[in-house]
Image 1 (cartoon, helix red, strand yellow):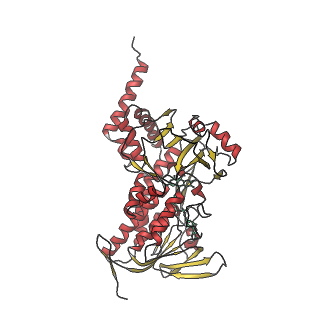
Image 2 (image 1 turned 135 degrees about the vertical axis):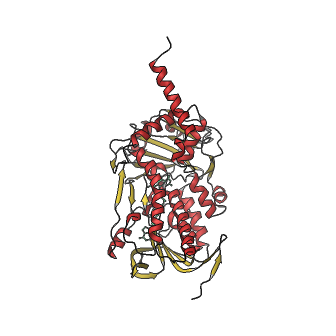
Image 3 (image 1 turned 30 degrees about the vertical axis):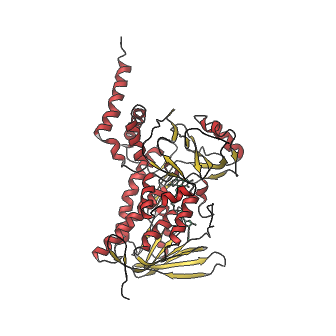
Length: 465
Ligand SMILES: Cc1cc2nc3c(=O)[nH]c(=O)nc-3n(C[C@H](O)[C@H](O)[C@H](O)COP(=O)(O)OP(=O)(O)OC[C@H]3O[C@@H](n4cnc5c(N)ncnc54)[C@H](O)[C@@H]3O)c2cc1C
């Protein structure tokens, strides 16, 4: 077959044949968009049959809980789907400045608020996913196959050549041939078992569990509510284990409670109200006075950080990669998952382009891609797990011994940010993945952080006579 060509802006890329994406969550949708520019056709297989309205579905039970898309994720997604931001706003997402509109109680005080220009949107995950799905299904060379479950991989020599698919209504099993398969089936991905069935080794797993649990409920805001904030968060900080937030969700409020160290909120009305009463600050309970509950309380448990180390596999079949939670699922309290999924899709695209310029087809792409995905995962992993290990009940692979020093330094940064808005802004940029964590260790930040701490210590040791 003569290759056909598609002008995708940067350069001419030859179409290959069919790519298959397993899972139509956030990672699967962004992967499908990327692959549609590099392959003849893309088939996206999704177990659920999603509705045409934003709403929860069985395959993503986490969507009933707060999902903040970090600013870095918003930027990259907006580049992939031009106009996404304005479309989300037009359909009810709230525009916000992530410092001015974000009231947060942390380390026993309210953090500073000021216009920062760090602007973006806040929406439900259901709306974000619906808009992405609508965009993706309008791309002519993508076929969306709902109501079907992938049950295994097909192998030819040392390459994956498609998937086994079962219809969920009648259980009919079929095979779907393809040259490239992306597993984006989330936290409960069966890819290790699929690879093992083909004779490949299982990936090693690192698990860090801070024993965090969620409970959420939707509310209609009290009539005429005007508080000067758009998001209100009471954040936990060890040893305190309880946190909560009010997030704007297309005109409603989503209230999400989070309990760390095994202190998960009981997902009942009574448990929800009791948990609210015991937060380190009463602001959330007060804001909810007069708010009307719009549905039941739902819970979520089992949100450990799990990294399946595909980047360490000695043997990989060609033509099979993993993306999103299937590669590494994070403790959700740091809101990294969707951003890592979209960054991973961006890296995948760069690798597809590089393979093309090397003229090596898909050969060797999987280990190269997984190694780079491992690199971007590492920094998010360190940020999340070093916070998790502030709780002595956290279990799993401990980060290096230097972590205590980093935690102590971060305490000084948090202390210093109250007087220095620029320091706080820097922290927010790191948390939003706009800057690397190393930016908090640059000389001027070190000076701003350590000097006041030394002065405070000196003043305490040598009080004026
Ligand atoms: C309680 C909670 C709160 C969270 N909050 C945030 C947050 O604030 N910010 C953030 O960025 N992230 C958050 N996350 C993480 C976020 O949900 C994921 O990281 C992100 O959605 C990427 O997921 P994914 O697309 O890889 O997997 P998922 O979203 O889980 O999607 C997987 C899809 O695959 C389908 N599927 C599964 N198996 C098969 C199969 N065999 N065949 C076909 N289809 C299949 C499922 O039906 C589903 O549609 C949170 C997670 C939890 C649990």
